[in-house]
Every structure is written in structure tokens, then in C-alpha cells.
Image 1 (tube, helix red, strand yellow):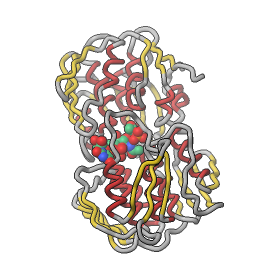
Image 2 (cartoon, protein in one colour):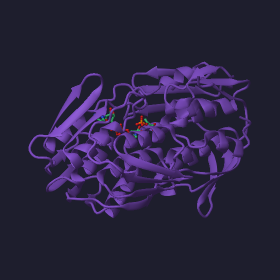
Image 3 (cartoon, rainbow, N blue to C red):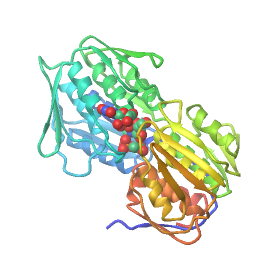
Image 4 (tube, rainbow, N blue to C red):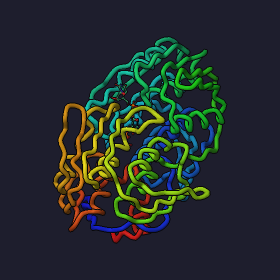
Length: 415
Ligand SMILES: CC(=O)N[C@H]1[C@@H](OP(=O)(O)OP(=O)(O)OC[C@H]2O[C@@H](n3ccc(=O)[nH]c3=O)[C@H](O)[C@@H]2O)O[C@H](CO)[C@@H](O)[C@@H]1O
Ligand SMILES: C=C(OP(=O)(O)O)C(=O)O
């Protein structure tokens, strides 16, 4: 049985290097399904639980996987396995695996998507885009999603109008369109670093993709994609975690590989809210600071990502005054606040807004990591609390933080 994580008060001090981004790495693994040639990914977060599940899923689909340190090499040994027979925990990325299978082989069957429970997490846009490109989509007992091209074996390019800037639906549209017959225009896409990373890799594989800002992406389908070697971008969520951790524990942390250009807006908010930092050559050096209240709402890039808001909430809990969080991407993603309340944080949910009355000293308690970002928020809070914080379901954190314990130790935390 998984052990609970025990966290005690500590100051983060030292150097830490950011790993490859979970939310890029997973999408690149789905893209690896688009070719029978070898895919090599570097700066790859092999240790993440979600990545390990995804790699195991690729094995079921006929790929051989070789991992060495932060590299993975994916080779195809068996082709045209279109059913992902899987009974263990699912991940959100099965939607993209389905897209990849259908565009490459004409059909696919995958477990229904898993991932963080963030309220209602629909996949109607994924169904819509597959249907637009000429597939029929249906659910099958027990818990599978299936799709098949209606005529022939190849999807047909089309117009895809996304009613909202969905990350996954933009990515799935790009994957499907890359091998479809003809041209696809994806209107109202979400342009964010992880999606540009996917486009970079697909382009190296021979895909023909043009990005017209947030207006549209045009993909001209090709018949085949080839081998690729590609490095994953650094994880901006991890970078933000150590930066906020340094302020709230009053420590000093040098964060190597810091993705400055991907975090411009969040860093402006944090600078104006008391974080003290300066820029090294390839690193951010955070020299503590005094947190002031924050008022944020989440939205598409370059705004504050929904995944970041639990970290901002912990930041707000550290200072006198009221902090406010509105999650426009996943309304009501505030389950973690109840857990932080067990440690003494005062809050109210007013309509769609989380209001935190900051400045109460936190005390260790037994809390539950309801999802990945909730888990890391509890961990940071635990570093500031008197006494022991016991985090149940702490495996959630390992879904998105590579070498978590090694990095905490490196920063002086006795774990
Ligand atoms: C693996 C990965 O990259 N996960 C990220 C991705 O999730 P994911 O790609 O699932 O999130 P989306 O950007 O698609 O979700 C945005 C909004 O669209 C809605 N929606 C989405 C799809 C759909 O078919 N129908 C629908 O209504 C969602 O409920 C949500 O309200 O982007 C989220 C928003 O930045 C992040 O929190 C997740 O960490
Ligand atoms: C919500 C997240 O991931 P997923 O989409 O994989 O559940 C996340 O990374 O915070």
C-alpha cells in the first residue's frame, strides 16, 4: 500500500533543475503513435507516473520502449494494433491516443479518459472533431471510447470550429489532421507552449502545420510521418512551484532551466505581490520576499493556467488580507481549499470565486491530495506549517513532479 507523505516545516534553499513538462511529454507520446519509425525524446520526464502509464499503453499498442536517464526511444515492433486493452488507471491522454490511432489506422478503441477530477470534464469537443474529419464515435462497455473512419481508412481534412480554446481538443485536431486527406483549419485554437512543442515535433516528422496566432491553425495532411529526435520543453508548473515555495518558506532558490518566456504573466503577478527575484543566465533566482494578497482569474495562455491557481491560493494564504481566485477554465476547482482549511486556512466560496482570508499560521494536519495540483499545494503549505502534515493519496503529486523527493532533499527538506 502507498505510504502517506509526511511534511514538516522547512526552508527551501539551494539549486534545482526543472524537468521536462508533463503536459508536453504526454502529448508527444501520443504523437509517437503517428509513425512506424523511431521517435527519440530528450529532456523527458521518465519518472512521472502518468508518463509511465502512457509508455505502458504504447507497449500494448506495439511499441518497444527504451528509457535511459531523461531520454526515451520508441520503436515499433508490431503495427496496426488499434485496441488499447487496458484495465488499470486511465489518463486524460487516451483521447489523443484515440485520435492518433484513427488517423493512422482508420480506427481505434481506448479506455475512457482519466486524469484529474476537475468537476465535469467533458470530451464532446474530441467527439466533434473526429466526426468533422469523417469518423463515427461511440462508447462501448465497460468504459471504452471507439472511433472509426466512415468511408475508407483515412480521415478527411475539414473545418473545425472550437467553441472554446481547449488544449486537448486543439492538440487532438492537429494530430488527426496531420495524416488526414486534404487540408484542415482549426479555428479558435489554444496556442500555448505545450502545443507549440507538439507542433515543433510534428513539423520535424514532416507534418505541414501553419499557425496564424490565436485565429487558426492550418494543417495540410501528409501520407506519412517519419523518425524524429526532439527535446521536451521545461515544465512551467514545476518552475512556478519552486518559485512560490521559496517565497513562502522565506528561502533562496536558484531554478535552472527556468522557462521565462512561458511564465511572463504569472511572474508579473508574483513580482507585484511581493516575490523577490532576479534573472541569471538560464535560471531564476528567488530571494524570498513578503507575500501580498493576490487577485487572479485563470484562462488561456498567456494568462494564468488553471493548474497554477492552487499554488496562488497557498501564496495568498500566507499574507494578511483577502486573496481572490476565479477559475474560468474549470469553474469551482477549489476542492483543495477544504483540505487547506484542515490546516487552518480560512476561506469561503462565493459563487464562482474562492476568497481566502490570509495570515493565519497553518498547523500540520492529515489532508488528502484530491488531485495533482491540489497535492503540491498541500505540500507547499506543509512546509510552512507547525507540526506534521500528513498527505494521503500523495501518489497524485508523482503524476506530475519528477524526482520529487530528490529535489526536495536537494533544497534542504528532510523527507
Ligand atoms: C494533459 C494536459 O495537458 N492537461 C491540461 C489540459 O487539459 P485539457 O486538455 O483536458 O483541458 P481543456 O483545455 O480541454 O479544458 C478547457 C475547458 O474546456 C472544457 N472542455 C474540454 C474538452 C471538451 O471536449 N469539452 C469541454 O467542454 C473543459 O471542461 C474545460 O472547462 O489543459 C487544462 C487547461 O489548461 C489543464 O488544466 C490540464 O493540466
Ligand atoms: C489537470 C492536469 O492534468 P490531466 O489533464 O492530465 O488530468 C494537471 O496537469 O494539472
